[in-house]
Length: 350
Ligand SMILES: Nc1ncnc2c1ncn2[C@@H]1O[C@H](COP(=O)(O)OP(=O)(O)OP(=O)(O)O)[C@@H](O)[C@H]1O
Image 1 (cartoon, rainbow, N blue to C red):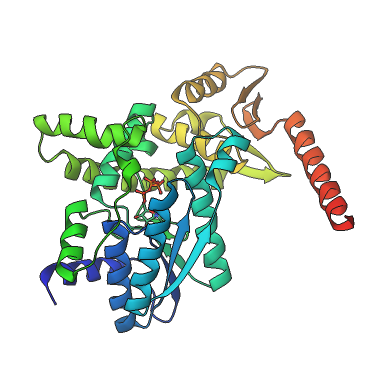
Image 2 (image 1 turned 180 degrees about the vertical axis):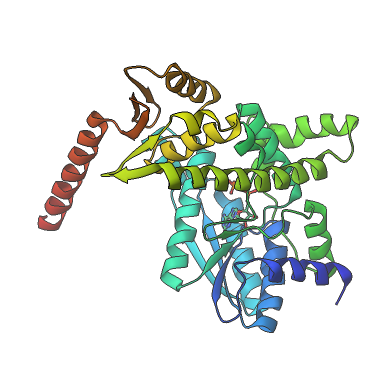
């Protein structure tokens, strides 16, 4: 076994979601990264007793090219003796219906399809082939969007059922593996389209940054790993404050924000607020919103309230902060559920 194959196999085997005796999914687009991942998983699976199912999602966005890719990955799986499933989705219709970009619609349908396959196959996890270059792009994209330290984390190596064992290796490594194994990968022509932000980051911004620092991709990926571990630690500490001073009553959080809260460093105060808003289903808070909420608490008198995105209302009252969905959005949710039930009843009748 070559050094490259050996190290890639170790990366897969070291993932906390790679467990002997389980079934896992390899998300296989057909690009060099995911072909390499599927091939490494197939080999390591035979050794470790992990059952691998390759899933390819055909988004129907690239006409005959995409159809050829789907056939190519299916052929590869047949030749490799790897279980294969193809799922067809209509990304264009979803994009039109929900006013999404084609990329976002495809992404949403892809992750839904992978998750459905995971459940139907009784698989433990979904392995994705994102690598160091993708991670550097994601970190930059997040920063360009105005994200803070959570965005700096980029993609996590393990997130729920999702595993990304290749975040530390380069795109070139995955191509070298495919070349070594004689595997032919598919080229996605939309990767050249610079009107897509990710492609602009890949083709323009990163090369420009590389002129100043040739190590930038690796260092961005390392910064992401560090930010992820710092963030996890700070969230744990903020969670301890919530455990000690907060309580959940009917989907609303109620937490003491007096002396002990004021004594917390800003890093923890802001995380306590963010976690509570997330807990009740709110959107990720902006820096400005967190500041406004902390100001409201610091002023500390009377009864005040603030609405934030995701229909979440925060009410400050006598040293306590209440965080919950605002009444109107609860009523809207209830009405939407009733309407959905009505629709399902009508569909059953017709
Ligand atoms: N059509 C597909 N079918 C199955 N898996 C896919 C498909 N497209 C992508 N994947 C999986 O997702 C990984 C990342 O793919 P890609 O870089 O194209 O995603 P993206 O468009 O940047 O979106 P995101 O990173 O949010 O998934 C691939 O390595 C592969 O594991």
